[in-house]
Length: 411
Image (tube, rainbow, N blue to C red; front, side, top):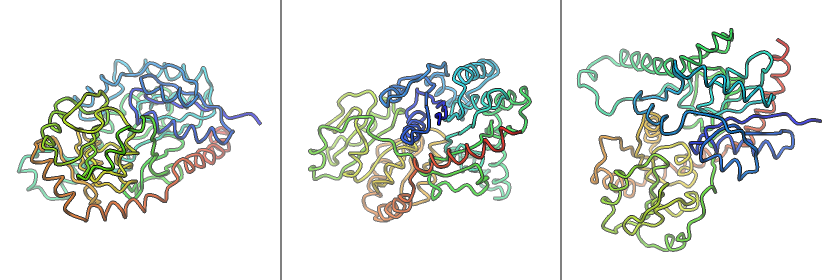
């Protein structure tokens, strides 16, 4: 029996948008049923190489430009009037060259979803999508500062306005994807957030991000995809474990900047806490442990608090190891995560209006002094432990493809 051909499409400029699909691809490879090749570009394609997969270098919007667009537009505007046709042709060329039975795509490869639905290509389209970015999750995003008069409006009006703003951003982000689908005559695949996939896998826990409006026939929670081991275990771990002080692990992922590092340096300059600092670009800071890249998964079990950027991967690792969080978020998606974690009683969130030494120390004091955070995250950890994300992903993809063959290809 010949293997099914799978094309995995990632943005290799960002860790999370590479390793989630990579983890699923590795689990699929173990079944012996699939032949898998990757498409992407950026420094984190090294993980794809290390896992033994071939990959096609594919031109994408670079990380720096993408971050600037997020900053300028409040949301991720990836396709524009100037580039949408270009990137559609790029994705179409990659898919036509490999002619896959299945494509698995992460965010920033949505135009591949359109290309995969053309008659002569028609591949089974799997989208690995964060729950918060799906049209089924109605997020509670609010700017850090609101005019006082807004709080005087009736709640019904506020909710209506919030929904209208949310839909505005979804349509803005997906406008040129939908435009391309219309040009191709693929109207039935148009969704408010762009391309309607054949299967959507949410690498999220339903306990935190329930999706009551989702169509369960093609939308599946698989639970967190916990990817670790890309960075080395730290040589200083034993010394950190023996340290008698309360331990704080800090990681701002790939989004940290020098200003924030200086703030942490100033905040914890008295040596009261044992601090381990994860940095993409290393450099000694105070007497902190680490100050470079290391395996966070090996350090978290011995930490009392995790100060992070409210990124998906960091959040779920903290929940796994039952470590309360101080969520030091930057943009709207991270704020959404932080809001939900705070509602669950497992984190305290600090937005851009609370970037002072006293705010951080107050948060640390509350997390260490109030036992509810540890109790809440322990309960949440036990609940989320029920997921076997990679096993579920492989099962859903296999079942989905069989149903796809019976229906979509016969249309």
